[in-house]
Image (tube, rainbow, N blue to C red; front, side, top):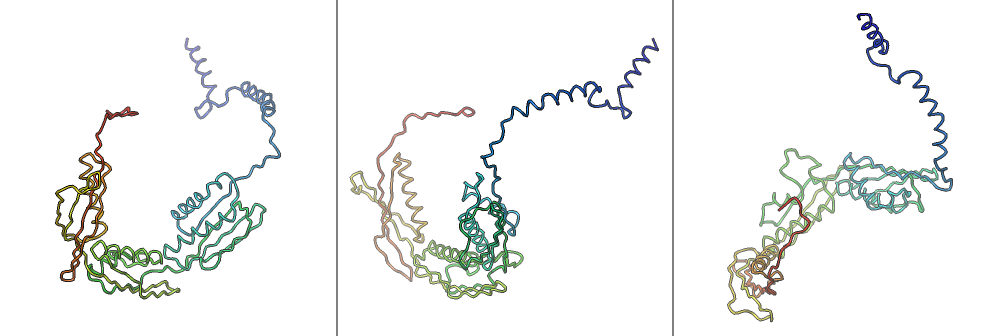
Length: 349
């Protein structure tokens, strides 16, 4: 009995390699059979595959690469450019229109970021194997050869100096502090006074001027004017100095509103309501008050209600113009809610 156990143990050891693991692949006969099957059936599988059509072109889709704007902006602008021409994702080469649009998108992005002297470079590999290089600074005419069939486009940038607010002067402002008005142009509450926190661009300046004026209008200065009177730029350092004049005009306030509700025939219902208001007369207040009047009719089951405010008369006292308004409310027909039925819900009650 001991000899039998010794033989079985010896057989088990013979099937294991010196490292204690079983040798992969099985016995030599099994490996030889697998090799013969592969040699026999491989020609059959290859014969079943259809022959490639020599007349069918197999071209790779064109590639676009952008560098010099940072990792995030590079990817964001690449996606934006490709979205403007979705047909290019189907493998068609880039044409002249695509290249021109890419130049415009990149140049506008740099300009809005404060790089007004930036130059965009492009290396275009054509399908014919020719390499074309195009540069554009955004000031001269963009000259892209026509026609073009580009299989690889590489865009780079030379950003130049960062244009920034070096000095900002605001004159004639009394409705709000000058520091608060400066916030419309750049942030003033930063710990470090960095150029990147005071970026300058013409579009950003125009938006800031418009926003400052709109803020004054919302405060009641309906005729306010904000004008850029002086603008100097240093193209070497990017320093910009701006002077702004503000004409606030007179303050307009709402003295009261006479609310008149109309019947379906357009005739005023007896018993109008006089509402005393002590608010600046601004477009925001006017919209909010009209919405409040419509909401009152909505709660009464009149979803088509409309409200309109008209200026009846004005009077000036101590440099302030008080406006007397009339609100005409058209309630519209009354609507009753019928049966309510919910469809398509499965996980809610």
